[in-house]
Image (cartoon, rainbow, N blue to C red; front, side):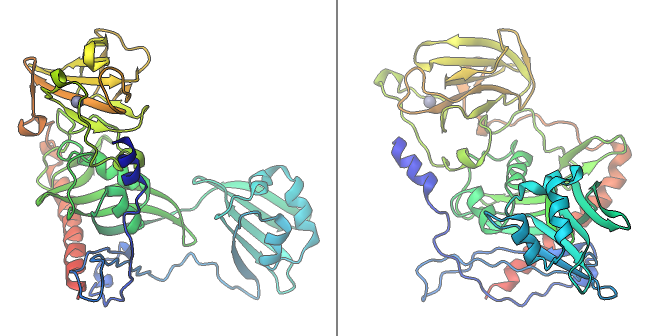
Length: 439
Ligand SMILES: [Zn+2]
């Protein structure tokens, strides 16, 4: 059983991908905010291919004003740091022919960040026509940039804030095996994938509830410097189709700076209970189909949900509440029970450990890490046994209507509607473009 799941985890989600050339019908001029439109779609099965999935990824890039320019014979060069690179090899490739700079970079206080030469990072250098270095720029982290400039009395190094250009990215992907399989194929960063799972965590169980054929469209912020992606920001709008049902979310921040996700109609997406108590990550997402069965027959009256996950995976409180029980209890092994509002409680079994400092009566908030997955008690492999109880009786959490959090306040409704309409239009655009583009 355990071995099987490791097999699932290790499997490549996409066996073969074929890039198709597409004729996009995107009117970029009507969408000044968008620098890049990328889409990933699933095409109908064709006779020539065994594999029914085609990957379509295309970038439409607007002319970037940030590209190093060629001014008065002084050239900007760009190089990516290679594995095992040395400073002199790097300067060589940058066409820098200047003995002084290598020594300066090796010793100058301010140039420390460049001495590590992290593979993949990009260095820009400006030289005159003889190869004398005039300036050098290196983004050492998502916040700071090392800048070296030639001055009358030699080189000067300084750390500056990275000038960032914000781009909104629109991407669309179909789910074949897991959320990460889809985001990898569409070249969507992990932090965006976990945001998607978080945004819809009250409606969709991303560990057990995803179906083949589910799909999503997202709009998120990316921050660029000279055409290089420095970091990704927040998901601003998302649509997720799970099991044929559409969920939409838009991000809205009020004038007091409180932000949250709402439906386009202004309903809060945050509900009193999360759908899954397991922290969503690349590791746990591979266990989508994990099913554990109890070892003893008398344990067979199984009234909970089992989440297969490696020992140590973090377990979250599904709702605000107080700890009603923490300790060992028979077949449950290490067990934690939370008492929530009204008659609701939740139980978490087979744990390897509890979060530090928790005891009976401790208050917890929704999403707090309360424990870690294990296989204590009667468990054939590491997994979380989760029970949702109403008046002490186990119930199927997905069959119960949950109370929701506050909707958009009346005084922000006009602001919100304007923004939601705009973002919804962008989601529609990509959705329609994607479908229209596949022959
Ligand atoms: Zn169980």
